[in-house]
Length: 192
Length: 181
Image (cartoon, rainbow over all chains, first blue to last red; front, top):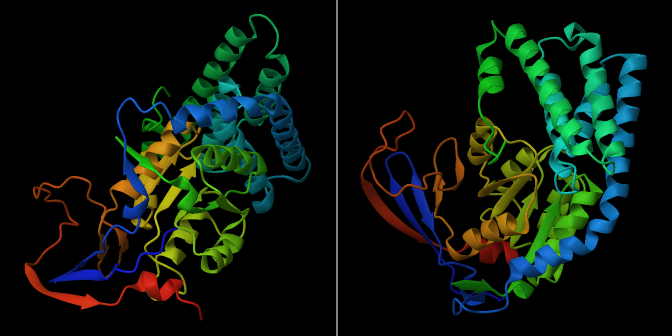
């Protein structure tokens, strides 16, 4: 960035805190432009992202494979710390990426799985099929997405799984107010 | 309306997911950025942070070795090796309010919940570049002012007490951090 030579800090000291202000170090790289400026960096970036979209299906398949492997390890060796961590990371990545890759329903199912892994008091007490159903649903949503009417089925599947997971978590966390509050709290993501 | 010369900004992107790093790199390059450094875990990011002295850090939360929250806390060490004032944008799949509060209390400047959008990322970068907030130092916190509301009506438990005592001028830590050696 452009060198800023005059960014001395101003420190205001109060009884219990200090307020530290510096001249904006970025001020030399900000330009005011006309509202009608045709060069829109957001549009440019969206076009570039669209250019990447040919790779999204392959990336989504890789994410699903990672999730399946993590689940297989849990099924074989149980919920050890690292096994749980890897399953959570795999689900959490799908929660974050899947909508960008064009699989928003897979993101919802993955979010539901993350909530179980994060808020179940004991993972060994989670109904045995509940986690398996989530993993298989995510795989099916991705695999079947090109088919006609797959969106409706994916929508219904992810919604039902979320309902089942929430019912379990609400019942299991009756004596754990922090977790119960987190389970019941709305997401900050618009549209969730 | 403001535009930023992205080609003069240096970014550090930290995410353990290679696909997300690729998306971020694509978006930042499209905005006009040339210098985008990437790390796949918190430890590598911290090393790169002190080596490359980025202007803006974009980090995931969940990562191996140490996570994005710990990375933010380490960057916000006033006596650390790097610039403790750099804007930190946390880009994460965590989307609960308590996570936002935790990130804020670790010194994160902006929070962006996935799924990522070009508009959301651009807006966060614009915020930190055009309207940087002052920093606050208390016994338990050092980071950007957590108050977005400029009115003085907050009466909660963390309300700041005390009138103005004095104003001290001191040399810029930013300059110190950027000077070689």
